[in-house]
Length: 200
Image (tube, rainbow, N blue to C red; front, side, top):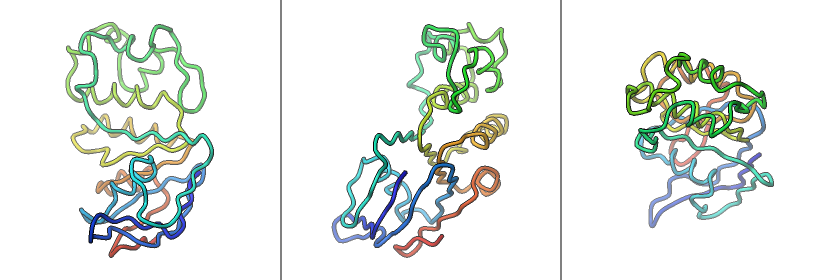
């Protein structure tokens, strides 16, 4: 899906990392670790083509779809209902595994009861809105899902939902974070950014 050859990124006189060589393949579940400021978020932006490397090559598969997830509850229309948000006018969604599922069944997997599906989003708690954003993001199949510090500000219920969804996800997954238990539960590879290099 993605291959880096001698990838280097810097800003002005500061080099974040240099001469990185790696591949990301379908089904890879990778944790990227490192201290603050070493370039983890900048590396994610390279995957999404939001940044251009200073030198080296970044090869992407043709028509590669990359989903970068951020929690930003203010993007939810407070007057909409979960049914309207997820169904988008129809009663079924196609999950990231390609399965056709009824909206109610899909949202049940994110801990929403049937009687809650027609309530305005403005009546839900912050944790419930986080789960709605996860449900909205995860219904769209992507080749690579990227989560930057996904467990920040999440309650235990929502972390549990996220773990289960990511375990079942068949595409590539990249997690940046510091929650060791969560990372161990959903990834099987660890890359460490340290002193401008990547240790795998």
